[in-house]
Length: 329
Image 1 (cartoon, rainbow, N blue to C red):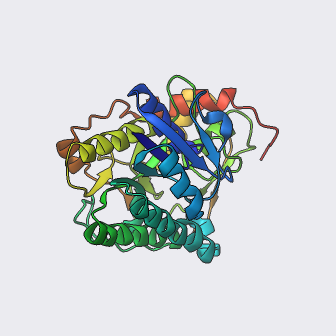
Image 2: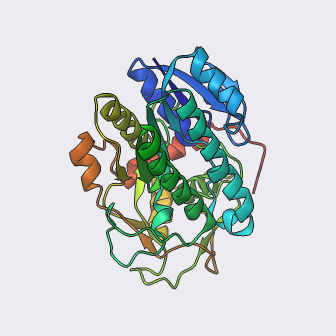
């Protein structure tokens, strides 16, 4: 049987492919390459360029490759962009996911892993958040993902689909073996941006908001290494295949770091004191998001291997050093 990985040529999806290969799984990748990179797909893994909303294409893949599970990563992910282009996000993240879910049902796929986000929590009253924390997204990005969660829950009840929803927090780092990492130019992820500044690809970087109710006034996030996140998705798939019932899980380490703490860590690890500009807050950014991560540890026996900010930064920095780009920001 085969796992269909949508968005498998992207940052997180490509790490999922690497993890699945290490577990000797059969994989097929579907990616429109709008933000993904074919070079991140290992030799021998079929890559089909296309849209997840092309139901004929998806059903053909399910039939041809005997797909029994879908790991869905394909999505737009930039919070500020979602505020300025909400309809684009509801199309790409929500409407197209609905078609993918329909294709899964029509094709008899039983197991579905959905890569969701902590953005569904918005600005929670309690901290750290748990899976029981009431979702209240403050951005179109978070809302677009929450809608997919609802659709999956309904499809599971109506059609016997078994789905695991993984709400991940701030993903960072790169494959420790140097096989994959963030490639997108003009990325907005903090650690990626700071590593670009440290390697001279940016002339500096900005901190958006220094008056939040946190220890140093900058936003606090729960950073998780992308390889730990990929393994969490594979363990979730193993759980479903072994007869486990789908549920919602937070993928997090249980502690946060502020924007300035991250920047100072990148400066320390790289040895480069790059310029930092203080700017106004961005719309859609909550002050703090940290989760316990207790449920995923207990249910899936998930044990993080890279729970260390310096390690995350070091892997991201090594990837950035070897990543070729002609763009200077």
